[in-house]
Image (cartoon, rainbow over all chains, first blue to last red; front, side):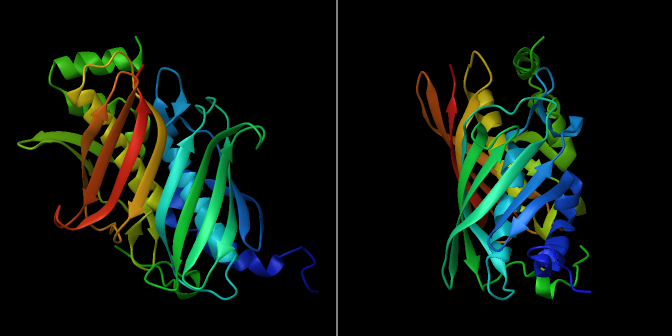
Length: 156
Length: 144
């Protein structure tokens, strides 16, 4: 029986990307996805903290969530699997993340061209309107980079 | 005692590596801090758990960004007499070459401008040679 969920054909791609070592290490969970967009959730863990006195999460965790979710959204925005590589990522940290709470990241393709993808992203806790950080990212498409379709799993 | 007070005490004792190690996240990804003849150097140890690209065996771009951000903060703490921890406003990372998980990633920062309220810091990260950077970033911090 065919899978009736929307965008179910994208599930294998989502599974490959979210199984990458650092996605797993951060414990990123998929909240939702569609062609050209995705939302991931990162549960709070003590080892992600940047200030042990206040318990606020390190900025690097926000950077990793946003790079991860923009990369995933970029793959999901391609008509066919191609390698992508982050060209640049700019993040505005709007407020400190509240300690002890999960952080969600949402990425969306704003414009896709043959060689470059333009994305926008948001990191938030309770509501997207009360964002912790926003980002813009560009990815090179179809050059040296990561392609889930060609992933044989390099062992260092 | 706040994190800032503990960092200031360790800095006064010349133990910037100890100050860097106070931050739980640096242990999670494996970022260390050392001093050499040229000044402060941050190092991300080679670890498979930091991989974000299994085709090239490359470090996750977010971890590269984290190393650059941490290096910028430590550089500010090292060369400036601050009254509190710098708060990051924004970070812009250019990814120049793949950063391979099989090797350590090194990074050094430069404070471009420090005003009363805001500082601008640039950082470059490399693996085989500083002349072949794998990533570069600039960041703004609020100091006051």
